[in-house]
Length: 271
Image (cartoon, rainbow, N blue to C red; front, side, top):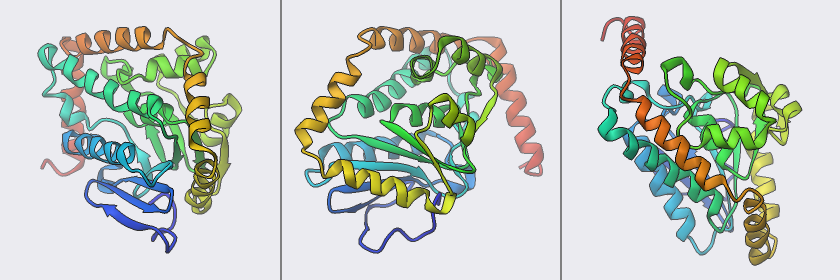
């Protein structure tokens, strides 16, 4: 986990599996739980995230959540082996699924804080950007990696990074796939705070408890107004999803995904 296990004693597990949910009073911790793959997103992982977010939205007791990852990463992005099965016919369904998943974090009634240590790349970075704000551990590494595969961030990351940063800097990060340290993320305003890795979860939980203690209708109203600052967001997200879906049909993506899979298999001894 990003912070020392187990969770503070009052927290109890309410959902187990690929994404765990722990809860205590008005705060939930949502834990992406595929540490052997640095919490990379495959079909099962995405389905588990959908279930966890749905539980959080429906829970009458919880008012705020912390989203984090098990092991030494927040989320390394999409499981690239999954991309080999995505084409022009299925690309839109994939990007739309990501839109629905992450847009629900922004437009839902309750805030979510991303607690990030280790790799927060590609789809993982897109997830973090969809949260209300980011608390980073000292080991955090942020970056978009999709262009390396002939793709673009298609789950809202292109739009959200362009909103969070000056557009020229967002272009640089998306087009070069450069990675940012936690300190650099703070300088750019992508992360709100940097803590030691072992204090990351406790700090994020403390902030969630502070927010959960506020009048919930006021919290909801404030988030609604802040989300309304950019009324063109939905249009931009729809354009991003459409272009990202079309890229899955290109020969460049097929070649680069196959190359990545072959290299990964070679590292694993050809299995």
